[in-house]
Length: 609
Image (tube, rainbow, N blue to C red; front, side):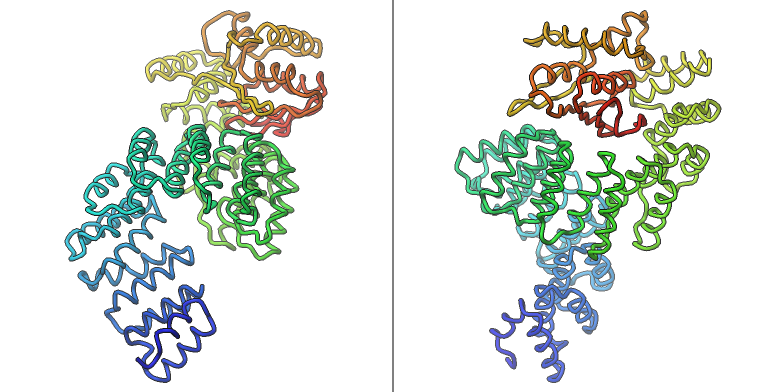
């Protein structure tokens, strides 16, 4: 061998040495021969020079050696560009159907997993080719398949592959546990976890992370506590980012602070993805100042760091701060992604910056090459709607390349109702009704619009559709966190130990808000009952119960934070604004559509949500 193996090994993590070695091999005429070409591609990949690796691979004479091919695919994956792996490989697969070896198969399946749920048909075709290849019994490739099908939300397919593995390894167990957990098969995930031969940190992480992704945050947090009690040493911070994410989704600020302390104690505060999770957690728990503190402490901020704080600022109505942060992001040379622009346009809609919103949308497409999704169009629609540009909003809905869904039509209808455009409201209502909505809130909105226009036949039609489709409003509940305890209140609840004190305070506050001109708005109550009974239903809404409890039990002068599982109704929104003045307290409410900051009789949403 003209080049010692030791030199090839050293070049794998030394960009200068890799390039010097490449020059030497070109002079010797060996740069395109195996194993030198494969070693060079591998060196470039591991030296974070993917473009050099791919340029060399594409210059090789066909057919490529499987080792060189596998090294090139690794370069794509290490540069977080799995889509390039497929565009690189598909022509080779078509031209040389018997070429892939087990390394290439495994790497390609990992690329498909990163692109889930796209390209399912292609993934299945490659799986079929693997089954007819000489490597069909390779368990490492099968483990990659388990992971791929799990990320395609096909846990039953993943289990079929898992059951065909002859010699299970750590990767196959963790992939299957994660596959079940992340796709909502909680019991199956727990059952498999209990019989796993090696319940190490990675198995715990797979289970906890999967449960967080499937919305089982409370279960994930309980398992994390159990993991700590079993003495599992946290040598990898991935599980911590998942636990922080669970705290964010459940709005458990105090628990999130405790996990933050654990992160610092274990020395992982410099880990970027953990810090990013903390920024997101504090923002979702309505503590934006803490989120900013964590963000400022990140030494090497990536796109997720910037996007998390931009979206957090936007959601809390701090539009100017969000736009200033974007300027800082651009100045720092960090390229924004699609989520960044969702936050930016959301910020513009809060303060009516229509021109700025249009410019950001244009820049997203033309300057950054990002194809707008339904979410981007919905943000632009919200911007136009909130600012009263209703005709432009309707034109956007009818011309955008993605089909408008129920929430899109409902948002436009809500804007028409808000701005008093009855003619357009009826036209939009007819479009929404034709979709046969599934959400109870859509039917409430439709009923109110038709009733306001005196179209009682349509009101009757809406109510009949609700009965025929068995549309039921999800029971409302609100959570409030006080110290280390979290309390849940359901609408109409009268079983709480402090029910008498809560009811007394609510009646007292009701008297005070009525003195300030409050008149109950019963338009959100669809049930056929008299006015007094409708007002009684509103009185016992869950956010009012949670607020009364918070006023009774919290430290005077502190912020009261409430999370609701449904959209705050218009009546409660009015009441909460008035109570913030009466009690001189700040009240933060996170519902399904907005973060509401009530202070001195005003709300950060500007009464449009």
